Length: 514
Image (cartoon, rainbow, N blue to C red; front, side, top):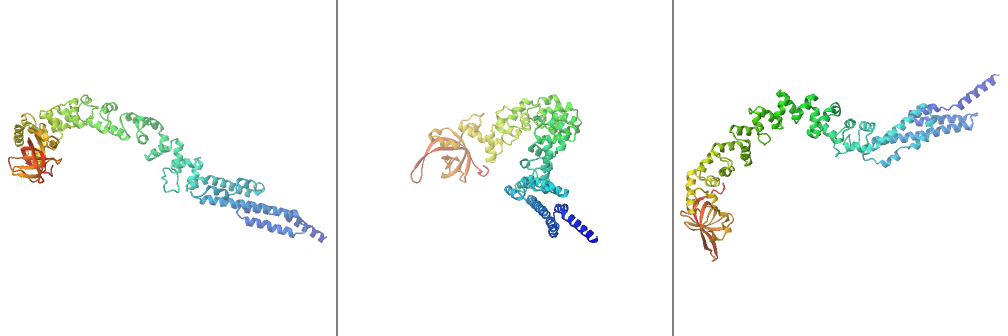
């Protein structure tokens, strides 16, 4: 009886051992990334089945099937983990073509038997791996484009931003020394949500305006987006302005910036009054100065739009010079102070002397003295600056001698009625007789105490006679009366016909000053 009971217990134990492989445990071990241990567990149990006299071939076959499934899924896991590692370490030098060799494809996953019959833990693990592989495949183009920040890449992908778009925005962190980053991933996401293009977003951001600020102040953005208020950089200034919309919109009509509006408000001036005065100048500072000038609005309106500064208006208005006359002075490039000075000396813009003297740094009061002595501005320069003679009486006396010799009327300027000595060589020497010339000559050769050969600035020779000793140091300035032609014979006997000149007035010239 005892032997029969022992036999039944042994048979029951062997039967239970033969029916239950540790599949769930082995599958859970795979989920814990213990592939070798899982396969070894089933293999060891399979060996024990093989040693049991009651186990059948189907039990051995089942063990082999389980081990095959374990090896298959472990191979898949190994491929996916390698692929994930490869993607994680990939940079812009990775080749996209090698991606196919780096991971198991979709078909490999579908053919895994344990996806369908594995333990809950293993199924969850495999699904997680598949998801990671799919995400890695999406990340790969970002990596090969040089993006290296994983969090930025995830943010781009989460917001469905393509790689090319991120590149065009110059957003994110890239492994490229030539890449000039304009936006972080978050900044790009935020700007795209507002609907602005990359250039507009960059202009605003560079000028201190954020997407959230634009969203809060969209009414202000819409108001200042018209061509009247300029481009995005100007709009950014208006958007940032810490003044309420109603006030800002009103004062912007006569202001060019937020700062201008603040200047107006600081003056505590009624808007309509400020608007009335703003016709004189677009710049607020200038308009405020005009308002405080002390000149009545009605008078100033006559000067509006004519291009005069407030200072010029004050000067002309004090001298009772009309805007029309002031424009005449302005057109002759004579400033307000000089124009008033000429008027004070009894001249007007139409006077010939004013035009002649206005180019020289001579005060009208001083010029008037020379004008009274019949000295022209050109003659003034000749004598005062080139010869060092600044006495109007001495200059006038010298010019009178020239007038008498050259038969120039007393009311005529010598400078207007003499030819240029620099051009005398362009004439037939015989045709110069009776004409007068003025200008500078350069010493060449002495002929006698009172005669010498000179050349003009064009190296054209002339013979000059003077009733005093001829200067031989270099350059001379003078007025010359031509007696016609003379013949000069050099050492080789070659004859040259030259103009024969009498010096009416002659002085050594300081060539350094000239």
